[in-house]
Image (cartoon, rainbow, N blue to C red):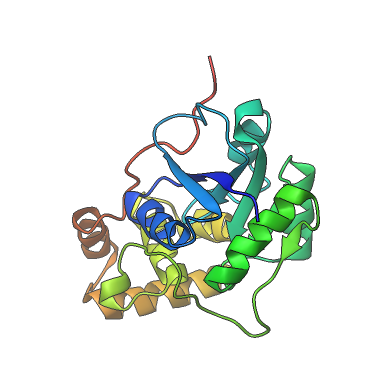
Length: 213
């Protein structure tokens, strides 16, 4: 299996580092670079766009990355496998769409498959609702990736309606995540949650994609 050059794009340092650690363990087939405060600046084969607390694959970030010839093939990495959203991401310029439910070895092989043009959409095992891959803010406090995502959006000051739109969930689902987050971190209201989030790394460390000059 040929060595694959992959850039990871995410606004949260802890998420980047978690993915980097996983992929570097497959260093005989994958070379990993991290994207910080800029668009991809040197040629790679694939750009893995993590959707943690960010616009999904049908947004401007993915479109901007896909228009950058240095980024290679852009691959969206997300929990949301809604068919309409997946198709919108592919129409937006993404070359592939991967589920966060994929085990590490399958994630790596899927990246190689997409690079070779042997597939676009790869889902995790049926019924998979969580993953041990990578890292995210609040993991040590028992928050799932999805709960952490909603808390990150809360820390950024988004309304429940805005969080639901970003997370492609109903407002009731978002409220359920908020309640479970509050219980886990001991917050009594939104202000307490925001302060806790700011102290614990739930605010983006840097911009995800910046238009090329």
